[in-house]
Image (cartoon, rainbow, N blue to C red; front, side, top):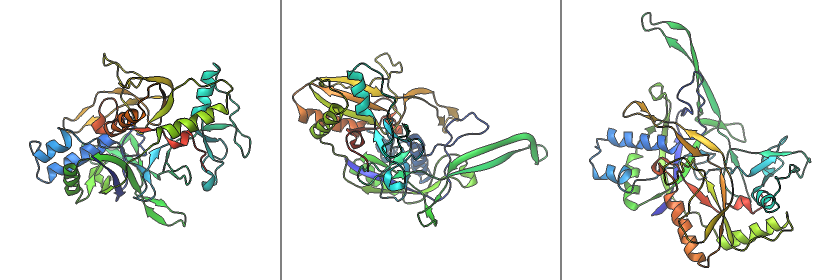
Length: 381
């Protein structure tokens, strides 16, 4: 399996509703993996393929592709990921320093230090520049602590009226708004530039070749496709997979925690798991669970900063809503402790976990993770 970057160039505004039952539906600021998967499947069938084809089976049935969520990026070569829930910034001037904000800090070490001292997290988490309070900061960024950059798509709104079926004129009392991602954005020179969405995926060589044939023409995704929305060009680019040094991360994390508490840290190697997409986690009775169960000897949970999210969807083939699932929201962070001796075995286990994901519905982009995010241990400039 090789790591590829999916690049989506928007040719029209993209609308994916967050809630299917609303007179003012709010659109998602990204393209979910479930929507991307459905769009690729529809494109394959329009090319003359059938569900019985070996290529269709390769993509969607046997060892299926785990289609990722595609997040906003300024250019196609940038790989965008969500900011973790532990990230915080000045409440008056939020953002990175190089983008005229007061900087972004991470609170994972502060949460763990407070846990060691059995006290609540100190509220005096203040901005270094203006001494104002820090607040959680959300959105998407490039994951580079030395040259960080946030990606905020331009949101467009379309207003609609209902049409009376008998008269063919505007129906009274029917008015609704749709919200989506614009296909253009303003660059630094205030000139309109193309909006891109990107995400990472692991593919076999055969899957790569099949997807390249599907991406030879434009693909439509999301809602209001009959109105011209959701058109995009998709391309695949091979790139180096994420690679983390567990021992180096553990040393930097320990040093950061030691600056916040005088209590000694329990022995073991610490590592984090951050959710790059919503994760549908269940226990052995298939009940919703907030816990990530790692089936590897010597791993115990050391803390978590999470939020729940209700996942809804629509099955286009059957024209029925999907079952609602309770998930752990993207950006949630888990901290674990390893007390074993086989560091290389642990690294291989976590690497495989990054490839396969966790939880249910992984082929739709759920359960994608990142191990040992650098923002937790490095100062963001």
